[in-house]
Image 1 (cartoon, rainbow, N blue to C red):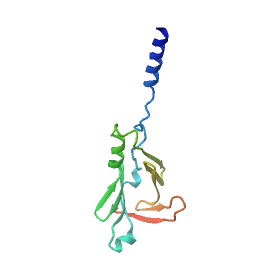
Image 2 (cartoon, helix red, strand yellow):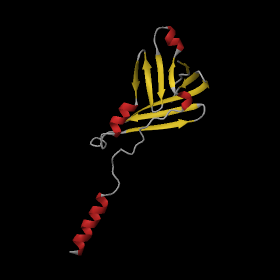
Image 3 (tube, one colour):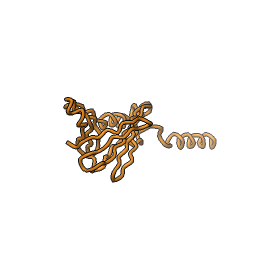
Length: 141
C-alpha cells in the first residue's frame, strides 16, 4: 500500500510541474517613444506609393498606401489560444537604445527581423539584416 501511495504522489508531482505550453513566450511589442509614429519612404511616395511603417505604443505595422498590416493582433492570436499553444509558437525579441530599435518577430519557424536607426527627429534608416543591404531612409509623416 505504501508503494502505491508513493507512486500516486510521484505521478501527481510530475503531472503538476511546469507546462509545456508556449504561453510564456514574449509576444509584446514595445517600440521606443522616439520612433513612434508613421514613417514613409519619400522616394516611393513621389512615385505614387505610400510605403513604410507605423510604430504604435504596443505594435509595429507595415503601411502600404492607406492600409496597415499590424503584428499585435496576429501575435495575440498565438498567446490567447490555450488550446493551440502546444502547436503554435510566437516570440518577440527587441533591442532598444536611444538611437536604434531592432526587433525579431518569430511566428512558427519564420522570423522577420527589422533594424531601424535614428538619423534625426524626422528621419530614420531601415538597415539590412543578415547581409541584406537596405539602408532605406524613412521620413516621419
